[in-house]
Image (cartoon, rainbow, N blue to C red; front, side, top):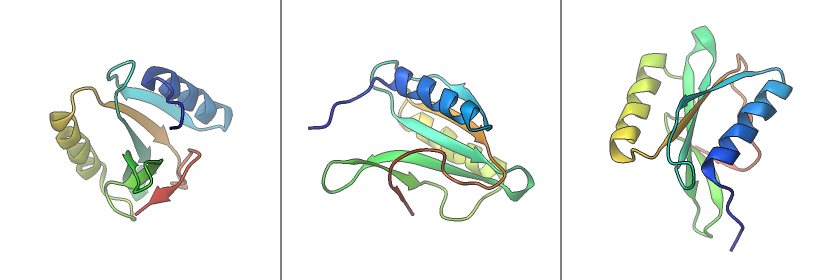
Length: 112
């Protein structure tokens, strides 16, 4: 079993990594400090937004899924997706990252 980093520490590290890469990132919603799941809202400005959500693959490894699909969606649609996820899991963290290119600023596998 892989070691698990507490959600709050992972979020703080991700925000700092984005800032170091020249991307603006902010914690849009705080969840459970120890075990909250994490959503990343990638804001591409006028092009729209995408939302990445953590899931486990068939092997139990943590991967990222494009919750709103492979293409950017209007920001209101991304926010509605996030709101539905928060309704299901109140411990959820949301990190919003501004990146006009829309590239996922995380290490790990991203699936559609």
